[in-house]
Image 1 (cartoon, rainbow, N blue to C red):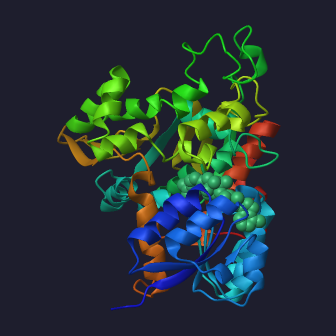
Image 2: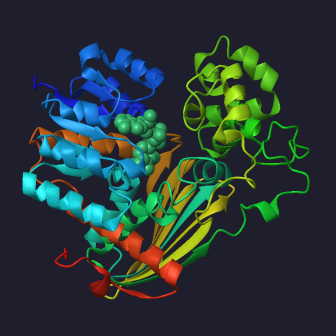
Length: 467
Ligand SMILES: NC(=O)c1ccc[n+]([C@@H]2O[C@H](COP(=O)([O-])OP(=O)(O)OC[C@H]3O[C@@H](n4cnc5c(N)ncnc54)[C@H](O)[C@@H]3O)[C@@H](O)[C@H]2O)c1
């Protein structure tokens, strides 16, 4: 049997622990995590325990682990957006192949520096554009390649971020303020821009964008709303952003279950919303129900390391996730549109916003022979093809409820990275240079939005960087 590859993880937070750490837990024959750098002692110790990492291979900071001589095959870098460039550069210099979370960096010159470093050192640098590895988007890509759509003329994509996800990440959480993190179009949509570039197959020629922060700000707070939900908010039972509704009752997550097509999940989700006490009693004898009632996954796992009721309440009383959504220090847009004309004349439009009742992306592609319509939702996935000549409507893909893992993308990405490391495949599905294109598109869109200009990509693109 082939030996598993070995890896170190810089940043054992939500992605390091729940996405790639969890993959390693259930794929021990493929990858072993043998070192970690994480400043939070609770997170670090938990991670060490799960992956059986010895004391002498656990470190506080990425600088410490990367100061050691290389002791694993790969470095998985899952620190926050503003802490990607330096660890990734140093890891490649130290001889590691690197799996780096998106966005690769939050400044364009740093993205270029990363691609150049990969070329100079000959190290693999893979950016976690996980959606390319989902069955949903690969079906769309294959359908385009098959010619069933004819020549693609226009693509319309929507990223409908639900009210609870948007408030969690972009008002109260890590990506709320572009000064400390990234603009929304980079943080959330470098995936979508990457998919567009992949599907169209050529770089963009012109980009324009509009958007702003329209709603989640002080002047829209209901009269008398306190700064924190638990400071006896008079709107507690009417507000969809009331923190205990999201993080203690988990109601928005149960509503996703209510929307899915798996009857048993639908039934228990309904029960959990309507008859909470019954579900709590049943959960003592039905373990999967206990997991749902005491949900410890995203987004709850982000608010605290103490997932008891008391721990969660303390986090909501004192931490950022208990703040009133109208009284935060957020500045990222809550809606933005991007228009793109590609070099082959195909046009595309991408809209992202944080006002959706349910979570998910949608896509429509019009070609000369057929129209494709797809929905990639938390509650399920579908792709339909409408053929013009035959008049037939055909469902070409169906996927079911997946609350985590990006519709199978996290697993697909890890399988592909490991195959690449083991040389089981010679050519990766994507590489850092291709990922850079989506980042260039995001920075250009942000420039257009802020300066009110159409961006001519030939002028905007860093010199010499043409794919
Ligand atoms: N691929 C995707 O679809 C996807 C999805 C979500 C997030 N992300 C990206 O993944 C990255 C991580 O996001 P997250 O939600 O896991 O964040 P997180 O804040 O939960 O995790 C980051 C971890 O890095 C640790 N850290 C801080 N300073 C450090 C240092 N000097 N050395 C080592 N570790 C340090 C933090 O303590 C924290 O545990 C972000 O860039 C985010 O944008 C990607």
